[in-house]
Image (cartoon, rainbow, N blue to C red; front, side):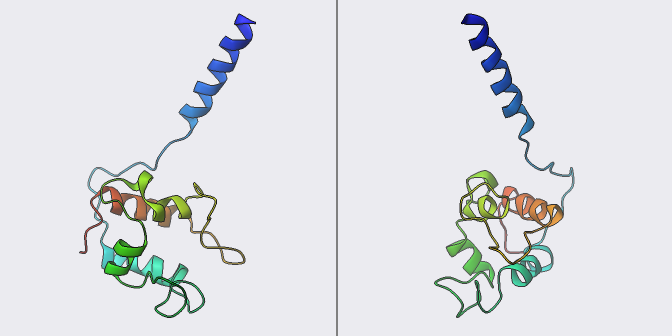
Length: 120
């Protein structure tokens, strides 16, 4: 029984070690206007989704993203926006039939939030 407990512990630790966050480049230059806003506009800002009149909240502009996107500046893992686009939430976005964001877009959003989610 003791050996089984040890084996389960080792497997659990191994699985936890496999879950990693995107690497942040040593000199990232992620800008809201040129990097983040185009991703959100093309993937989330459609008329039926998070455009100005499409849902209860918009993700079109910086203030909308901060106010309604659940962004915790400096903490991507705690931010609702990052959780839903990286499949860490039951509310996966964008919903089917839309394509999920690619890993590059998710990484850019992660880095932007970790950098303080600045309006630059």
